[in-house]
Image (cartoon, rainbow, N blue to C red; front, side, top):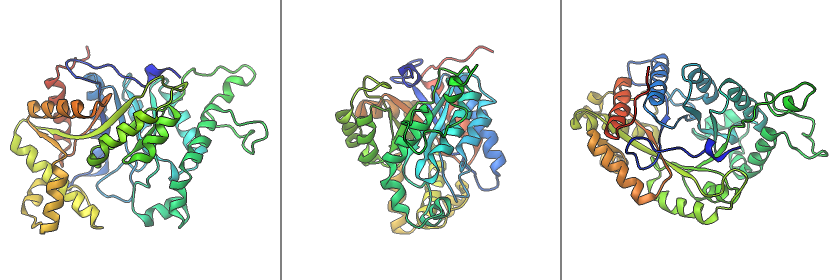
Length: 364
């Protein structure tokens, strides 16, 4: 695996590569079909404007988030793009058998050779009851505690290199390397690079120790960003994957033509989070509903705290905020997630950010 399948190149006047994180959000009055169509349009826009990669998150039992099956969505996006890297941000590994993930992402690699990333997390991506239904067990802590072992098993399946006496030595993830070693077989030189995702120090240290690239969820754990990145860099040991640390951070940012509209949209997104955090998940509300909502003092405190971490406003204001965040964190890549009730506004946000940095436009 080459490091150039991980490291991106800054475009235009960006300080580092810019990428996209898509939660496939569904607004009130819209359908999952509408949200997925927006994802296709957004992946095409990102590719045409020089964004480096496009990741899809895994969430479950959330009406306002239609990304429960990243591999399925990525296959759809692969059919509508040709160059941009596609990946999971991330697959929540404790929810799945490692062999299944190796098969899914081996299939995606066969569909889009050299363009697939496999980002892995250890959180459930949902509430406890849903996690129990996914994992068919009530022992939810076990999956997180076993994450290093699950990761090692998944890596073995991806590389098809279990020791001869291992119980899985004769089990092969297909598509995968076994096809290249079969009589007459020819195997692709690419294997999806594994990324570790995190919002605290656990995955940061593990990624550093294993010499893997690291993605930190700054967009919902900003207070831990710099400590986690420092821990990753301090723990890093060169590997066959990377000779030096490479860390991206997820950033919540929304650019609009009118600064007031940005404030309206992030208020609606914050109301959605209030409902999610209080056990009332739903579709992303309209700005009008959010403006009419009577927030309790505790809810208002949460909204103010949440929105203080969202870079929003005009394109120039968002560019300034992204530049400042890069200077403070030293991140090697910024992965932007834009939340708005309207899919067109999400598309416009990325277009405005691309214009602010002078990102190139692909020739037709």
